[in-house]
Image (cartoon, rainbow, N blue to C red):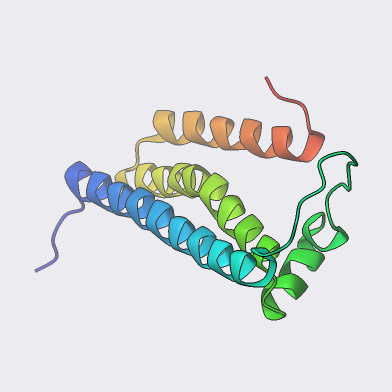
Length: 127
């Protein structure tokens, strides 16, 4: 006997995704912060000159290489990216839930929202 998929089940999954995404990203940022402070906590900061963002945190490939070499800033950046991606993952799972429920109106609305999110990310324009 198969259990019919319920709206409450989907809400529970979405809630779990949001909680897990926040907790995992928070843990990653914490670990990156500990590594960064361990390596650079004793350094004296000179605020008279602007140094800028290091190259290894300005591109996805640099972030991945920085994670494998245990650079604190790259790990913090990865945690922040995961935190930003968590609501997007929630929208994707909402669309999957609406498809399973065969609710085509809300599926279309959710896909439009997802299209807006991705076009904003790719274009760099907000609103």
